[in-house]
Length: 417
Image (cartoon, rainbow, N blue to C red; front, side):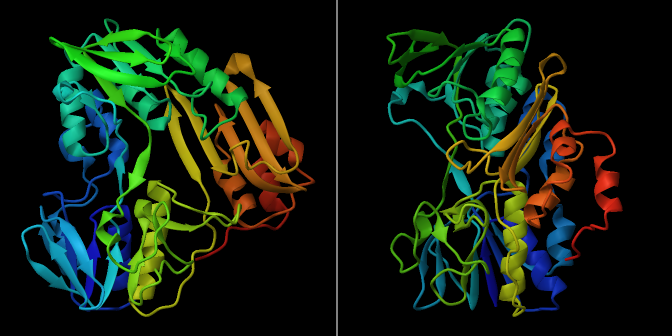
């Protein structure tokens, strides 16, 4: 009997893997949200009107029937009894398990210094409910303040941008996307934002958010009081680990797992945004909150739950997206704190092209690609397989057309999983 807590990328991938391995054991899926699985990545497209609400969902009712899943939607898991092998729900029900996957994801970080009466004016973006509120309020809002300059904030700006809106970005660091990109790439993104009329305030901390009448005010550590019709906080996410806090399951930032997605408790696994595994490039344990990572971890967890030993091959940060019409890809060791020796940089500022390769000797360990990302898959292959690129370093840095053909003509091929 398998029990899965969490109805998103990791949970769905685990379900498919369990069944693909031929395991026909009963599977119970517990989800706090009262709906089929959807992608948080798509919420900004919903806010902008590019897709309708139905377009957010990644599976329909047929998925759960096809894989013979007992679904418990709208029922939150609140505790786990590892000794009695039970999951306690908020309606006092107790769900038994033989093997358990915790795929509870993460929640958007909030700010502590927000007055209670700001409800309905201060938002985070993670769930469908969040997206619906932001969509509704932003249609009429004229002055909008966003706190944080990560991917969520920048994608939200793209979704709500309008000719009659005044948008201010409050940033704690001194560049946008400080966790994903270096200053060279960030400066191109910054110019693109400023050209769209976005005001950016760097090096600011938020002292307090207060409400006066129908508006809120963001008070910064510079003494500024920024008036807004709505405020959107984009300060990253925190893994949902409360479920295991009173158990023997080991945690750090997330639930600690090995390369088979096992926790320290027998037959209890974790995958997705809640799981903290070893980054194979840095050697450190960390949570990697991306859809791609969650799918990969969920698949490995599902295989092991089905009794098929499997290990995650490579585990590192990666993201491919579009920022205000500019394609962007980051993968591997892109933080300056992680850089080892040297690297190569290629920039065509007039064309909004910037590419930085982070190298360990002649092997790629990271890449930042902006404006020219067609070969991102080949670069990921080089990082994953520790390929010596000394013969093509300059070609890769420039993103020269035909590099992929040159690469494969040397006899290299994609690994088959």
